[in-house]
Every structure is written in structure tokens, then in C-alpha cells.
Length: 379
Image (cartoon, rainbow, N blue to C red):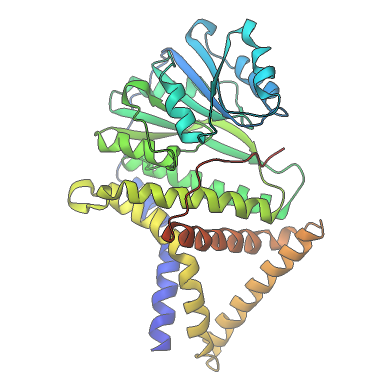
């Protein structure tokens, strides 16, 4: 029985991290649903969600104003979720350069702030961004060229994380998003992605659907558009630069909030788990989201079943490898707490932080605890 449990859990874990991406890669060698791209210039609104971003908002606005896109077709709106610092004051200083401040009272959270601000947006395409994200100069042009194809309802750009302090958890974040971007590229080639990068994603305004405030918009809004029969494209040349978190505590807290909102979001969109109607979308959501969130509950079974098999050379080796991995994660955490950097321990540390966050998010979801508002993490 221990051997069966060991191989079943190992198989699911291997499939989640390696089998699914390899299968997607294999399919993409034979399937290529090309997107018709064109050098078009639709009216665009860049919607920047902000809460207490006085340290970042001016630099973000300078970056956005300097993007390569016609000024008469670019609207920049800062959606302030009842900011209590100097964020709104700083944004008003850019009003003579066309920047619009839309303040939402009541501290309603990012999703509801976006819901209310989209109503005043004049662009045919709305690009959602955060105050801490910097765009590559041609990012807007790279995004909007996909909308030449009438089948495209939303477009996600690509995260390029930077780790200025060399924090181990930051290195883990960089490795994860390189992996994630590779998968998204293949998903687009086959048919569609099922979620977007929150700091650089866009939708046709005509397709935008207001969401409940406890729902994560960069996952559920694209799913609502998929439900309407449109594709979601991943544009790897539309690059957003974002700094990683600096400590494992910051990363854990952010991941708990994001994952719990994602779980609420998938429950909200549970009709998409009908494989007879949604096929490839159902397959992607189950393989790339649900199974990944279930990994922390499989890992104890893998370790304990392996313990009962110790004595056989192969199983002794796999048990020792697991123990060393977790020791490495703990060592990385302790060194992180001491302010020391250990790049060799970055991967086990990040892996354990993310899976611990998934477990915490699952229990928060079960008891009905919702994450609506957000706090500024990156300074």
C-alpha cells in the first residue's frame, strides 16, 4: 500500500510540474492557431490601480507617459482605492499632462475599484496595471496588435521580474515566472491562455464584465471573456518589469491573498469545469491551477509513504533527497530571516513558501474568509 501511495502522489506531482508542460509543448508542435496581428492604433486606456503608492506613483506615471503610443489615443487613469497618503495629490500634479485621477471612496478593493473606473474609460482597449510596474517602451503597441484578430477578447503581457537585493525568494520568483511564461506561450499557440498577468493585461472594453469585489480580476475577467467565446492571447513581447518581494514573509502573505482569491474565482466560474462544453479550457484549469493548489496536501503523503519504504536502496535515496530538500528550505528561511543570501537554497525556499501559501489559502477559502482589499508590499 505504501508503494502505491508513493507512486500515485509522485505521479500527480510530476504531472503537475513537468508532465502537463511537456504535453502542452508536444501539442504545440502540431497545433498552431495563429493570431492575426496588425500595426493598429485603437484608443487605449491604461488603468493604474493604486492604494497608498506615494513612493511609486510618480515614477510609474513618467514611465507610462513615455511609452511609444500616440498621445491623442492614450488615456491614463489612476484608480485610487481611497488612498490615505499623498498618492492622489501626486497624481493631480500630472493633470496638465492628461493624467486623470479617479478616486473610489470606501476602500472597496482592487476589483471593485477597477469595476467603477472602467465605466469612465474612453479607450476601446483597457490595459490594467499596478503602480509598481514599469512597462517596456513598446508594450502597448505589442499588446494592441493582437486585437486586429476579432477572435481575441483579452491579451496578457509578460512579467520580467528583477531582484535588485538578491533575495533568495526573489530568485525563486524569477525562475517560476520564466517557467510560467513558457507555458503561457504554448497555451496561446494551441488555443488560449486561461489567466492573465495582473500587472499587464488588457481587454476589449465592450467585453468587460463587472465582477464581485472578492474575485481576482486577472483570472476571472479573462475567464468571463472565454465564456463569451473569445480567445485570450499571451504576448511575450509586451514586457512589464516588476521587483520581487524581499522576504519569505512578504511572498507568503502576497501568495495567500492571491491564491485564496483565485480559489474563490474558480468556484465562481465553476461552470467552466464541464469538459463536454469547454474541453481544453477545463483541462488547462484542472492541470495548471487546481492540481498545483493541491500539491501541499500530497507532499506529506509522499514523505510518509516513502518512510515506510526505507530499507530498499531506491526508496532510501528518495527519502534522503526529500529530507535534504526540506532542510534546504528551512536553512534558506533562517538565513533569509538573518538577512543573508543563499542562492543555492532559493528554489527549495520558494517552493515551500508557495505551497505553504496554497495550504493556508485553501483553509481560508473553506472557512469563507475573503481577501478584498490589498496592502502595498513593494516599497
